[in-house]
Amino acid sequence: MQNNDVQIISVKINVQKITPFEADGIVYHADTCLPLVDAVERRKVKFKALARYTYPGERLDNNTLGLNSIGYWDANEPQDWGLDWHRNEGIEIHFLESGYMPYSQEKKEIELQPNDLTITRPWEAHKVGNPYVGVGKFYWVILDLGVRRPHQNWVWPEWIILAPKDLLRLTTILRHNEDVRLRSNKHVRNCFQRIGRAVDTDEDGSNSSLIRLLVNELLVLLLDLLDSENMELNEELTDSSRSVKLFLNELEKNLAETWTIEKMADSAGVGLTRFTHHCKNLTNLTPMRYLMLRRLNMAKEILLNNNDFSVAEVAFSCGFSTSQYFSTVFKKHENCTPIEYRLKKQEVV
Image 1 (cartoon, one colour):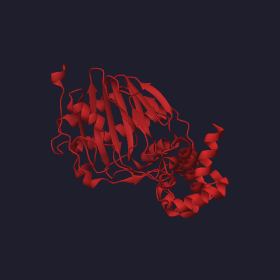
Image 2: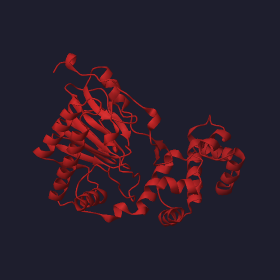
Image 3: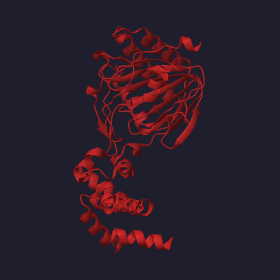
């Protein structure tokens, strides 16, 4: 396939129907895949997808609510783009039919080979490419299960028709095991190939029934695959304390947010009492004191590494409401003012 054979789709993005969610104090939206969109426009890659919200592709209709994106890209030459760290608002199943694909999920870096399959959950950061994606054909299916944190119960779209016991088994395995890569088989490969053809030939929802059928088939095949792997299950992965721990780890990225204990609990996806309990167990601190100490640590780093920042700029960058309050809190904990701290550390150096 030569470059002039590369298919370009009209990328339609509807930003008015986004369902945002918070994971670390930052509001996440559906991944827009802008590097992919740019690569398509530059005729670097063949791409076809059906999608909703900010995902690129032809628009999905209401017959597949809960399915947020389904499609593939096909790269037949070295690429100069990648999808950096991001999260989806649903569970995503990737499949590599051919070629190779640098892939990272949380702290694990791997190179996908043909017939490799990966699964990411909403709280799992992942990227495709290191920094560039590989040559090959790459499929995906993204389903919104109404969860954002590990402890929350999954709600599958109503058109998922697996028997209750099978769906419970699949959900349990996916919640209690977070292995990054699975080796699939010819049945999974065939299912994804048929998904690709259904996406290719869909016109304004004409293949909605077929797509629903194929997604159900894929889930049955996935359950069989997981069962054959004798996956080791860990119920601690769905404990609410893990959701709080994830939130506290992520809090570092957005300390300047106007946090209240209620907002922190909401972002962690747990009740106020349980959030306070888990925070105390994990840090030996109340949530607001933990937040204040993290802000002070951030302030000290800025004072040392950014001489151009005024005290007011440091205060606001770290989430303190006023420079006066910041100076008061800082002096109480460090026995010196922010300016004195900066000067003393510079003298030591």
